[in-house]
Length: 119
Image (cartoon, rainbow, N blue to C red; front, side, top):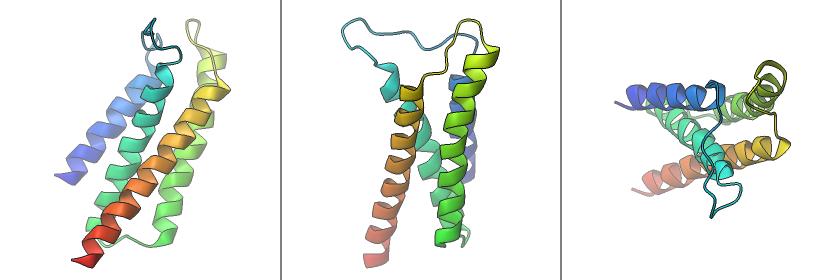
């Protein structure tokens, strides 16, 4: 089940980053898309780390690999949006929100793991 959830999270993640138009803005909350960016990175990172943990891949190396891949993808996706999309722009603040999401996903995994280790 975790594998399916991880795959779906990655598919939604990629769709959100590479669809033709950006997310609709909310007039009463400026920069609301930053929340979407953070959640869009936090959820797949968390689920992938939980999946790897389930299959015995819980070392720091795996955690760094997943977090590093998503952190690099944050920058790459913004560059792709900037260079190759007409209706989208590469925004460094989006990459920052993505990195915050990566950190939240990793911290969430660490908290879940710490709690399960206590049991």
